[in-house]
Image (cartoon, rainbow, N blue to C red; front, side):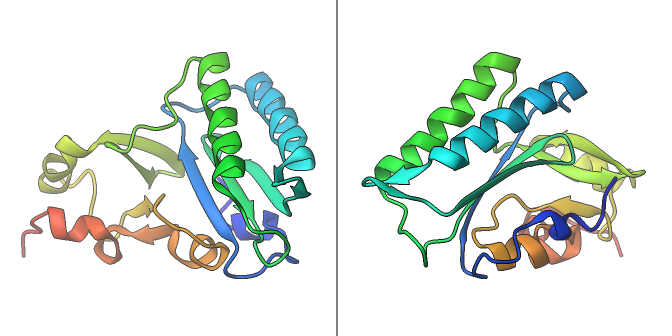
Length: 169
């Protein structure tokens, strides 16, 4: 697993560039990942907001997370341009029979792999030490490039999840 994913992010995008993270319900196979990469590259090359090109970036990270980014210092992102990105993600869902919009499944880095866990099983996983306060959590709620770089992969104890669990002392 590549821990220095931030090196894949464009250096010329502003720290406040808008970010959307979509988590797949499963790891993509290599052939699927290559197809998705083509779809993402085509999308960002043609992404527009009210006729103006959007300075956009898209990538499939860890084989399971699609990250879209728009540097709004170049062109603001409108509702229509956001809708077009959602249509792309829905297209990917249909093409590969995955769910990209399930916010009730959490992702953690365990034994150098992405492991999925239904939110309803979080306390059980904590109670049985499958997940600890130091386990790395994929915080898909990040909204900017700076947050993606610094607050996407964080320990459970530094995430919003800490308010939903009881940790035995």
